[in-house]
Amino acid sequence: MNFWNLQTYSVNGKVVVITGGLGAIGKALALRLAELGACVALVDIAPDKDGQLFCAEINRRFGQAVAAYLAADLRRKDDIAHMLEWAYTHFGHLDVLINNAGVASPAMLYEGETFDQISAILDINLRAPIEATRLFVKYLTEKQRQGVVVNMASIGGLVPNRGGEVYGAAKAALIHLTRASQSLAPQIRVSAVAPYYVKTPMVLNNPKLKNNNTVFPQLMLDVEQVCAATTRCIEDTTSAGKTFAMIGRSEHVRMWHFDLAVVHITILAGWSLMVAYVRRLLRIK
Image (tube, rainbow, N blue to C red):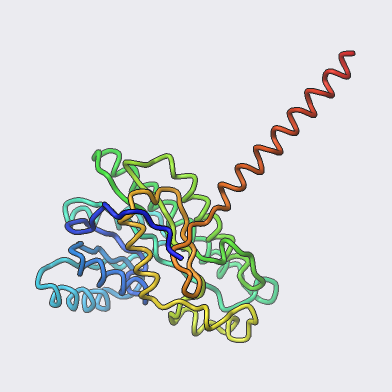
Protein backbone atom coordinates (compact mmCIF):
# COMPACT_ATOMS: atom_id res chain seq x y z
CA MET A 1 0.00 0.00 0.00
CA ASN A 2 1.38 3.39 -0.91
CA PHE A 3 -0.46 6.66 -0.36
CA TRP A 4 2.17 9.19 -1.34
CA ASN A 5 1.48 12.36 -3.25
CA LEU A 6 3.58 13.90 -5.98
CA GLN A 7 7.16 14.55 -4.96
CA THR A 8 8.20 18.11 -5.70
CA TYR A 9 11.09 18.79 -3.29
CA SER A 10 14.44 17.73 -4.71
CA VAL A 11 17.37 16.79 -2.46
CA ASN A 12 19.81 17.71 -5.22
CA GLY A 13 22.10 20.46 -3.91
CA LYS A 14 20.64 20.28 -0.39
CA VAL A 15 22.70 19.89 2.80
CA VAL A 16 21.43 17.04 4.96
CA VAL A 17 22.46 16.50 8.59
CA ILE A 18 22.14 12.83 9.60
CA THR A 19 22.50 11.80 13.24
CA GLY A 20 23.49 8.21 13.88
CA GLY A 21 25.34 8.59 10.60
CA LEU A 22 27.56 5.53 11.03
CA GLY A 23 24.80 3.09 11.89
CA ALA A 24 23.33 0.75 9.28
CA ILE A 25 20.47 3.09 8.37
CA GLY A 26 22.61 6.23 8.65
CA LYS A 27 25.24 4.91 6.24
CA ALA A 28 22.64 3.74 3.75
CA LEU A 29 20.89 7.12 3.93
CA ALA A 30 24.16 8.97 3.36
CA LEU A 31 24.94 6.93 0.24
CA ARG A 32 21.41 7.25 -1.13
CA LEU A 33 21.19 11.01 -0.60
CA ALA A 34 24.70 11.65 -1.94
CA GLU A 35 23.73 9.67 -5.03
CA LEU A 36 20.74 12.01 -5.43
CA GLY A 37 23.04 15.03 -5.32
CA ALA A 38 22.91 16.06 -1.65
CA CYS A 39 25.77 16.97 0.65
CA VAL A 40 25.69 14.89 3.83
CA ALA A 41 26.91 15.98 7.27
CA LEU A 42 27.21 12.80 9.31
CA VAL A 43 27.14 12.85 13.11
CA ASP A 44 27.82 9.88 15.36
CA ILE A 45 29.49 8.99 18.65
CA ALA A 46 32.01 6.72 16.89
CA PRO A 47 35.67 7.80 16.72
CA ASP A 48 36.66 10.44 14.20
CA LYS A 49 38.75 8.00 12.15
CA ASP A 50 35.73 5.76 11.52
CA GLY A 51 33.69 8.65 10.20
CA GLN A 52 36.51 10.00 8.08
CA LEU A 53 37.02 6.60 6.43
CA PHE A 54 33.35 6.34 5.51
CA CYS A 55 33.21 9.93 4.24
CA ALA A 56 36.31 9.29 2.14
CA GLU A 57 34.50 6.33 0.58
CA ILE A 58 31.49 8.51 -0.28
CA ASN A 59 33.66 11.29 -1.69
CA ARG A 60 35.63 8.84 -3.83
CA ARG A 61 32.45 7.32 -5.17
CA PHE A 62 30.92 10.66 -6.15
CA GLY A 63 34.10 12.45 -7.10
CA GLN A 64 33.69 15.49 -4.86
CA ALA A 65 33.67 16.52 -1.21
CA VAL A 66 29.98 15.89 -0.50
CA ALA A 67 30.39 14.13 2.86
CA ALA A 68 31.86 15.25 6.18
CA TYR A 69 31.89 13.70 9.65
CA LEU A 70 31.66 14.98 13.21
CA ALA A 71 32.06 12.84 16.33
CA ALA A 72 29.54 14.05 18.93
CA ASP A 73 27.65 12.82 21.98
CA LEU A 74 24.00 13.72 21.53
CA ARG A 75 23.39 13.33 25.25
CA ARG A 76 25.15 16.68 25.62
CA LYS A 77 23.34 19.89 24.80
CA ASP A 78 26.52 21.63 23.67
CA ASP A 79 27.33 18.82 21.25
CA ILE A 80 23.91 19.14 19.63
CA ALA A 81 24.37 22.87 19.12
CA HIS A 82 27.91 22.34 17.84
CA MET A 83 26.65 19.73 15.37
CA LEU A 84 24.50 22.27 13.55
CA GLU A 85 27.08 25.04 13.78
CA TRP A 86 29.75 22.72 12.37
CA ALA A 87 27.54 21.56 9.48
CA TYR A 88 26.63 25.16 8.63
CA THR A 89 30.28 26.28 8.70
CA HIS A 90 31.41 23.32 6.61
CA PHE A 91 28.75 23.45 3.89
CA GLY A 92 27.52 27.05 4.07
CA HIS A 93 23.84 26.33 4.69
CA LEU A 94 21.45 23.67 6.06
CA ASP A 95 18.33 22.24 4.49
CA VAL A 96 17.39 18.88 6.01
CA LEU A 97 17.76 17.29 9.44
CA ILE A 98 17.28 13.54 9.86
CA ASN A 99 16.99 12.58 13.54
CA ASN A 100 18.13 9.02 12.98
CA ALA A 101 20.29 8.27 16.04
CA GLY A 102 18.72 5.77 18.38
CA VAL A 103 19.57 3.23 21.06
CA ALA A 104 17.75 0.34 22.70
CA SER A 105 18.41 -1.52 25.92
CA PRO A 106 19.09 -5.28 26.03
CA ALA A 107 17.36 -5.44 29.44
CA MET A 108 13.69 -5.54 30.42
CA LEU A 109 12.23 -2.55 32.29
CA TYR A 110 10.92 -4.56 35.23
CA GLU A 111 13.67 -7.18 35.14
CA GLY A 112 16.95 -5.34 35.36
CA GLU A 113 16.86 -2.29 33.11
CA THR A 114 18.94 0.33 34.93
CA PHE A 115 18.45 4.04 35.42
CA ASP A 116 21.46 4.75 33.20
CA GLN A 117 20.04 2.59 30.39
CA ILE A 118 16.68 4.33 30.69
CA SER A 119 18.38 7.73 30.66
CA ALA A 120 20.36 6.87 27.53
CA ILE A 121 17.20 5.81 25.69
CA LEU A 122 15.36 9.00 26.63
CA ASP A 123 18.35 11.27 26.00
CA ILE A 124 19.28 9.93 22.57
CA ASN A 125 15.87 8.85 21.25
CA LEU A 126 13.87 11.85 22.47
CA ARG A 127 15.73 14.75 24.10
CA ALA A 128 18.35 14.96 21.36
CA PRO A 129 15.81 15.06 18.48
CA ILE A 130 13.76 17.68 20.33
CA GLU A 131 16.76 19.92 20.91
CA ALA A 132 18.19 19.38 17.43
CA THR A 133 14.83 20.17 15.84
CA ARG A 134 14.39 23.25 18.02
CA LEU A 135 17.78 24.66 17.03
CA PHE A 136 17.33 23.68 13.39
CA VAL A 137 13.96 25.44 13.22
CA LYS A 138 15.50 28.50 14.86
CA TYR A 139 18.26 28.52 12.23
CA LEU A 140 15.81 28.20 9.32
CA THR A 141 13.58 30.91 10.75
CA GLU A 142 16.45 33.34 11.21
CA LYS A 143 17.84 32.62 7.74
CA GLN A 144 14.35 32.65 6.19
CA ARG A 145 15.05 29.31 4.53
CA GLN A 146 12.78 26.37 3.82
CA GLY A 147 13.72 23.07 5.38
CA VAL A 148 12.71 19.54 6.30
CA VAL A 149 12.98 17.43 9.45
CA VAL A 150 12.47 13.66 9.38
CA ASN A 151 12.21 11.84 12.70
CA MET A 152 13.07 8.16 12.88
CA ALA A 153 10.25 6.82 15.03
CA SER A 154 9.06 3.22 15.37
CA ILE A 155 6.02 0.97 15.27
CA GLY A 156 6.82 0.58 18.98
CA GLY A 157 5.72 4.18 19.42
CA LEU A 158 2.31 3.32 17.94
CA VAL A 159 1.70 -0.14 19.43
CA PRO A 160 2.86 -0.65 23.05
CA ASN A 161 4.63 -3.93 23.74
CA ARG A 162 6.19 -5.72 26.70
CA GLY A 163 9.93 -5.19 26.74
CA GLY A 164 9.83 -1.95 24.81
CA GLU A 165 8.16 0.25 27.38
CA VAL A 166 10.78 3.01 27.58
CA TYR A 167 11.91 2.78 23.96
CA GLY A 168 8.28 2.89 22.80
CA ALA A 169 7.46 5.79 25.11
CA ALA A 170 10.32 7.82 23.62
CA LYS A 171 9.23 7.02 20.07
CA ALA A 172 5.59 7.81 20.86
CA ALA A 173 6.68 11.20 22.14
CA LEU A 174 8.69 11.73 18.95
CA ILE A 175 5.58 10.98 16.89
CA HIS A 176 3.65 13.48 19.02
CA LEU A 177 6.38 16.09 18.43
CA THR A 178 6.07 15.47 14.71
CA ARG A 179 2.34 16.07 14.65
CA ALA A 180 2.54 19.05 16.99
CA SER A 181 5.08 20.65 14.61
CA GLN A 182 2.68 20.56 11.65
CA SER A 183 1.98 24.28 12.04
CA LEU A 184 5.55 25.08 10.95
CA ALA A 185 4.64 24.17 7.37
CA PRO A 186 4.99 25.17 4.62
CA GLN A 187 8.32 26.80 5.47
CA ILE A 188 9.47 23.86 7.57
CA ARG A 189 8.07 20.35 7.21
CA VAL A 190 8.43 17.86 10.06
CA SER A 191 7.44 14.26 9.38
CA ALA A 192 8.29 10.82 10.74
CA VAL A 193 8.91 7.26 9.62
CA ALA A 194 7.74 4.51 11.97
CA PRO A 195 9.17 1.17 10.86
CA TYR A 196 8.64 -2.28 12.30
CA TYR A 197 11.84 -4.07 13.32
CA VAL A 198 14.61 -3.36 10.82
CA LYS A 199 17.38 -5.83 9.99
CA THR A 200 20.19 -3.89 11.66
CA PRO A 201 22.82 -5.07 14.18
CA MET A 202 21.03 -3.15 16.96
CA VAL A 203 17.90 -5.25 16.38
CA LEU A 204 19.43 -8.59 15.38
CA ASN A 205 21.86 -8.59 18.32
CA ASN A 206 19.35 -7.53 20.97
CA PRO A 207 18.88 -10.59 23.24
CA LYS A 208 15.42 -9.65 24.45
CA LEU A 209 14.08 -9.78 20.88
CA LYS A 210 15.40 -13.23 19.99
CA ASN A 211 12.76 -15.15 21.96
CA ASN A 212 10.03 -12.53 21.70
CA ASN A 213 6.87 -14.02 20.19
CA THR A 214 5.77 -10.58 18.98
CA VAL A 215 8.67 -10.38 16.52
CA PHE A 216 7.78 -11.86 13.13
CA PRO A 217 10.84 -12.27 10.86
CA GLN A 218 8.67 -12.24 7.73
CA LEU A 219 7.52 -8.71 8.64
CA MET A 220 10.98 -7.29 9.31
CA LEU A 221 12.22 -4.52 7.05
CA ASP A 222 15.40 -4.10 5.04
CA VAL A 223 17.49 -0.99 5.58
CA GLU A 224 16.83 -0.02 1.95
CA GLN A 225 13.09 0.15 2.60
CA VAL A 226 13.58 2.57 5.48
CA CYS A 227 15.95 4.71 3.40
CA ALA A 228 13.43 4.90 0.57
CA ALA A 229 10.67 5.97 2.98
CA THR A 230 12.88 8.59 4.61
CA THR A 231 13.81 10.01 1.23
CA ARG A 232 10.16 10.14 0.24
CA CYS A 233 9.38 12.07 3.44
CA ILE A 234 11.93 14.67 2.38
CA GLU A 235 10.60 14.88 -1.15
CA ASP A 236 6.87 14.89 -0.42
CA THR A 237 5.76 18.48 0.16
CA THR A 238 2.50 17.27 1.76
CA SER A 239 4.23 15.24 4.50
CA ALA A 240 4.14 17.90 7.26
CA GLY A 241 3.00 16.47 10.58
CA LYS A 242 2.52 12.99 9.19
CA THR A 243 3.88 9.70 10.47
CA PHE A 244 4.27 6.90 7.95
CA ALA A 245 4.22 3.35 9.25
CA MET A 246 6.11 0.48 7.64
CA ILE A 247 5.63 -3.23 8.24
CA GLY A 248 6.43 -6.11 5.90
CA ARG A 249 5.56 -5.07 2.37
CA SER A 250 2.98 -2.48 3.54
CA GLU A 251 5.15 0.58 3.22
CA HIS A 252 4.56 4.29 3.71
CA VAL A 253 1.06 3.95 5.20
CA ARG A 254 -0.10 7.19 6.75
CA MET A 255 -1.23 6.79 10.34
CA TRP A 256 -4.55 8.43 11.21
CA HIS A 257 -4.39 8.01 14.98
CA PHE A 258 -4.07 11.73 15.71
CA ASP A 259 -6.90 12.62 13.33
CA LEU A 260 -9.15 10.03 14.96
CA ALA A 261 -8.09 11.16 18.42
CA VAL A 262 -9.05 14.75 17.60
CA VAL A 263 -12.51 13.58 16.47
CA HIS A 264 -12.87 11.46 19.61
CA ILE A 265 -11.83 14.26 21.95
CA THR A 266 -14.07 16.75 20.11
CA ILE A 267 -17.06 14.46 20.64
CA LEU A 268 -16.19 13.99 24.31
CA ALA A 269 -15.69 17.72 24.78
CA GLY A 270 -19.00 18.52 23.08
CA TRP A 271 -20.82 15.96 25.22
CA SER A 272 -19.20 17.29 28.41
CA LEU A 273 -20.13 20.87 27.54
CA MET A 274 -23.72 19.84 26.83
CA VAL A 275 -23.95 17.96 30.14
CA ALA A 276 -22.50 20.95 32.01
CA TYR A 277 -24.97 23.28 30.28
CA VAL A 278 -27.95 21.05 31.13
CA ARG A 279 -26.86 20.71 34.76
CA ARG A 280 -26.50 24.48 34.99
CA LEU A 281 -30.02 24.98 33.63
CA LEU A 282 -31.43 22.49 36.12
CA ARG A 283 -29.69 24.24 39.00
CA ILE A 284 -31.03 27.60 37.85
CA LYS A 285 -34.57 26.28 37.85
